[in-house]
Length: 303
Ligand SMILES: [Zn+2]
Image (cartoon, rainbow, N blue to C red; front, top):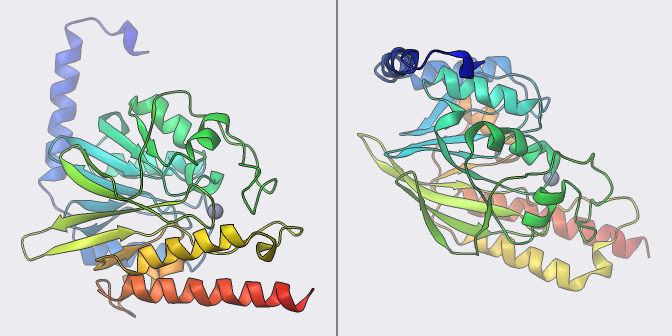
């Protein structure tokens, strides 16, 4: 419909929308209120597509996902960055939440991914169409995003509905690679295991009071189809353990996870556990290691 707008109307619209964005930006969120609103709307391990209000995580970092699936907005000096899209339906919640914060998906300069499962990246193709932004992902996740189909080596291969394939630009990043996007420097941390291409992300966020290191720590659960046995794939298990060890060793003041409940985010939002906790990545690594060990023991016992 925008191609029907007379040419001299465009600057006017830009002016009006810039005014809207400014009005929102100049009325900062009350973080406690928004966190309380999220916690009142959502339950632990909630539905993937259930709309949730956005809230401020820290500084220029915001939660824009649904009740069940995280999506993270980072507002940089030169645009905005989004991590994860949720499902295709969930990506509409993300779009609405980004707008509620006075921004637009059209401003997105980069789309980052956690892991290549449709609950986290099923809406990526849609968000890329809306933004034209490149996707930044791991070399193992890229073919899955491009095809929309699981990697056959994924322990959960065959369990997921196909996703809309990402048609636009995909840039792959390596473990420990630092990328500067929209003025924000983000480090890629390869944490394979839940999938081959699982990626965590680490960056620093500063507000007027403090700077913290945020880690968006990817899923690290040993989940599979009924017939898959991790014990049949010792090299995969070694890779899994290396990823967990990598996460445990990170500077990590504020842990976020693609499934909010995996890092206790709902309880932390209610103030039942610390929002900022420098031991969070180590605790997360210990809990996923215990789960992996239990899975391997169960498989060994069933032999
Ligand atoms: Zn998954």
